[in-house]
Amino acid sequence: MTSTVTESVVSPTTSETDTDTAVAADEVLAELLIEEISIDGMCGVY
Amino acid sequence: MTHYALHPQVGLRDEAFGALAYHYGNRRLTFLNDARLVTVVRTAAEHQDIDDALAAAGVPDGQRPAYLTALQRLHDAEILTCE
Image 1 (tube, chains in turn red, blue):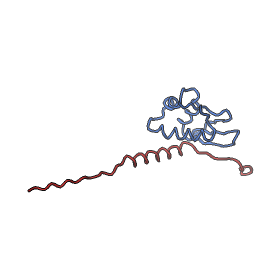
Image 2 (tube, chains in turn cyan, yellow):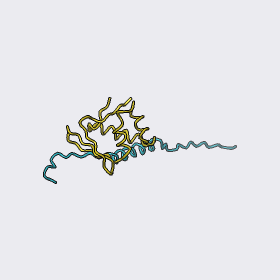
Image 3 (cartoon, chains in turn purple, green):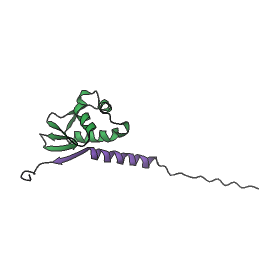
Image 4 (cartoon, chains in turn green, purple):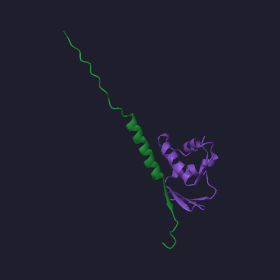
């Protein structure tokens, strides 16, 4: 008699991680593109 | 469809790194550190929507989400108006 063992392997999904990484990369690039400062209260500094 | 335009109270000055945007109303100063972003900001009003402006400025498709995020921040800072 032959027994058959069926094993199901669940691969970790990477799509969520990939999406998170892409969003993080977009945020980093957006941060590099612009930089905001307020000059209020800087009178007398220069 | 998103249509951005430079806020009428904002002055834009070209710099070696890109441009400086100064809002005369809220007195905020914003550094635009990318020549393509400066082009988009300058020409956004001339295009039907922001996707056209991004394409005309040569922004790669893969970088558009980051540019759209940056443009949304410029809108939040009142550098850009949005219709």
